[in-house]
Length: 348
Image 1 (cartoon, rainbow, N blue to C red):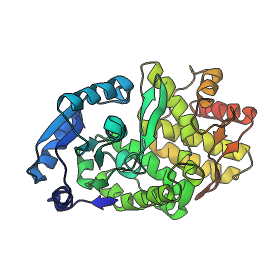
Image 2: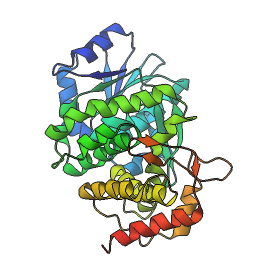
Image 3: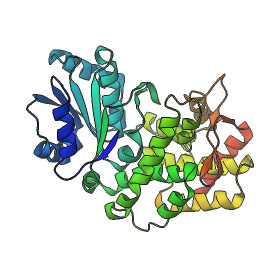
Image 4: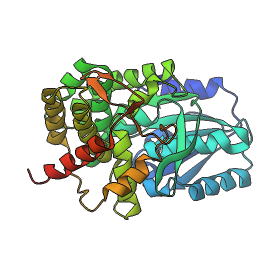
């Protein structure tokens, strides 16, 4: 399922030669069009006709209007059910491209070539596709595996620092929920750069893939991957709604701080472990100002979280560093307490 590409992309070319696709559509945004598409096209060997589909970059483009435009373009270009979509980009591109492919003509094949750390370690893996609805994250989507995921780590050299840091949040999450040794190795990194991160990418990919294989449709253990995301998605959604979008990993980092403190308030982890987690996340991530977000606004978003059942807010919370519970219902008092704790960090 996941293949690390060598410099001549021979694994991708073998895949294209072995399959009987009618046409190729390559989905990019303006950033991957400029920085990554030339590398792909310079190494891709195929006699098939291909078209480039470009959308604007940014989470705000991950909506039904963009999906509709792409469906219309595929229809106008007479894409049939043997066509292939190559999603070349970060999480928005792999989420959007997978959703469009899995719904067009009830499903055509697609592959992901992630170009950001976030998409390499998390977003492109696991068969979740989706778009945002209003300001609710990933509210509409499908569970559909890509035919293949091809990872070319050198694409990370094209990223600004903030994008590397955003993806690093998901790597930290993988260690916290499933592999303490991975967490310990990651927090030894002093400078977030490609050279320091590449040795740890495979471990994060393996953790994500292992969890997904055990629970594809997110009935049980896959929910642990949502650690930091319940509150993190609420913060991300409110920032997006107010026209001040933050990167996904920045919101997840804030969410992990809140939810680590929440796990302590719920007596799941010790104060010492909570403090260790929070202090290490703070080393890498700036404080996100949520003072203007009312608790009522955050709770309204928490109640719309996809994991909830019977209007109960279900969290995935750490039981120790390297292990995580799921479907955990917290007291409203402690949720409010975790938000207040995060707000106070700005005064520290």
